[in-house]
Image (cartoon, rainbow, N blue to C red; front, side, top):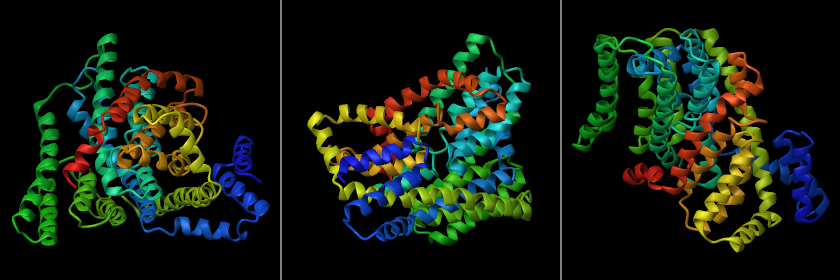
Length: 467
């Protein structure tokens, strides 16, 4: 059995409708049995070794943190904060949709969680305010892609493990592109608002806007103040603990809406860049923070809700880790059969210009993203493309962001876009109408992709600054 036969077998199994994880593991098993290059038990050994990884422990904890935030009703606080901040603009709830997704992405780490959690609230509110349901679905779908770009991000964890890249650096790389994407989406909302003559959805009130700006100021000043104190020689742990106690007092005295929820990405990024904890330990810290907010501070999380969130986490984690395990043995088989080497030689013989390669890689990943779930796509494409990326001198952190952004856009495409199915159910729209509603929003997303691809500084500025 040749390497070509191995690739054809995998594609045939995929085309027959077999789940991608089983197709990867099954084709690898058949190849080993037919060629005899290794004992059969190597498949189980490689699959187990693929998930025997400390960084992968971040996956269940990030999923649990997002589920706990959803169950504890944090989404309502985020929505009210975004409404006070930008609801008075023309097309207000469209802007609220984008800003809410920016905030929620700092907790969920997935596009589907954003669409299903915050999207349910946003679409209902927009329909009640007279917006076209197609517009509500389109802006919700587009803003949901921010979930895995702004940290934390499950796709970044998977890519970081597969490509041996710092997960903390990937998290930092997603912040500025996420802001750029949000700005382009808000410009698109403004365009539709002016074209259709939409007004504001709430009356401008200095008190509400000032309260929202005060919360933003607290989020910005708080980590800078802690960093300044620690840089001046103050002991790190007592300073951080004291700072959070003070933050809780400020939140209670000023009756702030979402400042503690907004602290989640600050907690993660600050802890990782300061060396206080790794990405995996940061995921655990996010869970502890979510439990504290839900059980102790807001008291909106009950034990039955906690049990339900835990069971959902187990179900999602098992799916993700099975894909990773199957991809591990599949990647090993690609290496053993020299498939990755042959693909690299073929691509480099075609072009050694990294800009042309990035164009071809974007087209490939957009196509793959239409058919495969992001975790499966990352685990298949990373071993194939990474040798070429390194040979052409492309920063693997930059390429990781390009890959994740492509696959997030793929979530909005038929035939397999998960966000499409979620929003069709939430908005009670047909699959066809949901698809048509999303199409105009591919313009800001593809423009963001071009900027991120060909202006690496957008992605690498923060990782370089804080390295």
